[in-house]
Length: 70
Image (cartoon, rainbow, N blue to C red; front, side, top):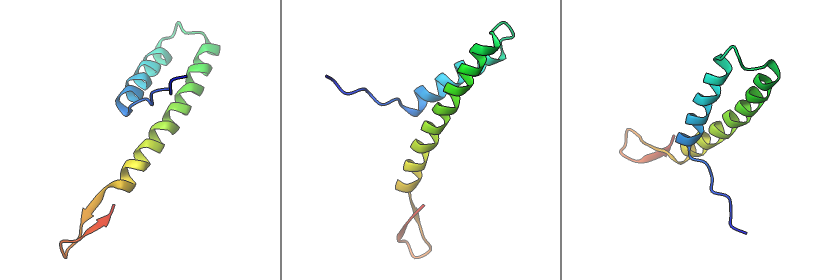
């Protein structure tokens, strides 16, 4: 069984934009809106986790010319 490809941040952000558009549509039933909202919160957690990993890997040059973690 092949491993599932991890979603990129760009893909996740695009999916969130689609969800926002659906939520803004007044013709979407309330129950479906709740499902979209729940899925969106999971996606936001995923994005937050990915961004946290990137921030921890980033380095910042200090005043002495050395590198410190961001």
